[in-house]
Length: 450
Image (tube, rainbow, N blue to C red):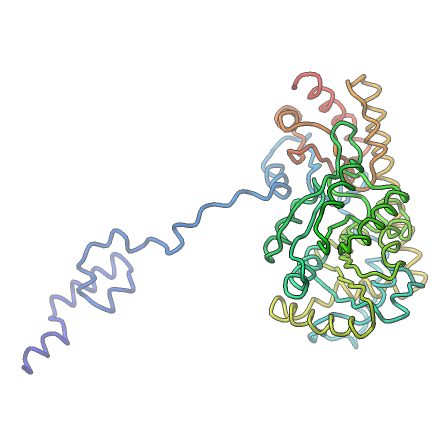
């Protein structure tokens, strides 16, 4: 018995040498566990437990940049991603942002400690005032809870998670079309995502009749996503009178508004004008959600700075809602980053810096408006078939050109111009130098490709 046990507990020298040789040749850590395994066939020893994972497709928007970066052409033009560019085609850091950042760096009292789960108090207070108005009754009555989030995307996600846990209706209606990330953000939280008509391809404008019909048939209490201004991707916004009709319909059916405000001040050049749709809903005393982003209007794309404000019926409800928002945020990212929010707070609380920001913001907005006019004129001068007046009627960073996917493919192949397959172009990526090249491409696409 003893001899048998010893034989099983200690492999003979030849077996040990064989095991060592196999380990050396194959590098399999499993061999050290049982030398018998080492002598077995090892054709599957290096197959990953993730071999079943398929390659995901490129993001339809970010994938445009991937393709653009691979193109060696000197005339290539990226009109896919929504990021502002100067007339020289360069990214822009606002002067007021650089100044605020330098002030923060020079302040030796600043530390890098964690900030609260809900973010910087000054940032939250000032963000609410910026979007709702300094004289907002909801703010004065403490009916608003605002939490700092990871830009607009994070603000939407935190709001969606809260609604999935605490709201009785789990259906959200989003406009058709909308930003490509919207259905994913809300769908991943378990909300049922449905669409309402918004854009009319025949007029390249708002399908207001269809919008009212779809929201009118939505179940009572459903959530409705609304673009506060500069609708992405179409650039088509309701008029003030149409917003009022939308508000009346939604309140009559107890539909819950969830505003996505990514372009405040960036659309018209006026911060208050671009927030009017939200303020109309807040003024009536009802509840609503507002997601804010400082990516576009302060150029803080990579700082990921945003806020979620929830307007409630009472201060007590707002306080309880905030306590639950903390429970959403804590396991998600614990607490938000400090740097970008500190830049925003520094600018918003200083009158001179705020005014400097407004001036720089209007310069950006006006340049985009100028690009619209130049592109429209260039197409008209070329006699490009069709009515292109929608280019100057639409507002904000994007223009929904009406070009189809075949025409987009043609423009990319023949002119090295990159845009999303739905024909959306970022006007902020254009310059006076590149407008003629784009106009030539559009003219050729329209006349040669059906």
